[in-house]
Image 1 (spheres, rainbow, N blue to C red):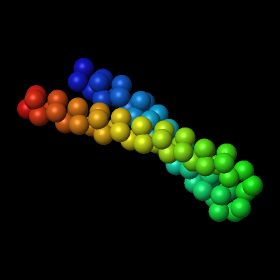
Image 2 (image 1 turned 180 degrees about the vertical axis):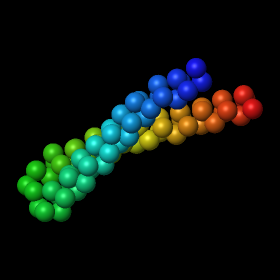
Image 3 (image 1 turned 120 degrees about the vertical axis):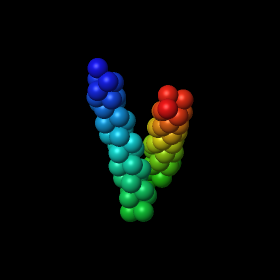
Length: 77
């Protein structure tokens, strides 16, 4: 029964990693288009801001969950 909990977390972790990867891809695309001189500078800056914020939120969530996990391990041990 002890292995059920970590495996239950795996899909969420993989999903969150895919979300972070998507953010990085979208950020890179916005940067590429801006550097290439795309005329919609305002829209691309908004895109860059939105995806950067999403990535920051996901990374903060990951750090918080990691800290909670370490705290739980320390309390259990």
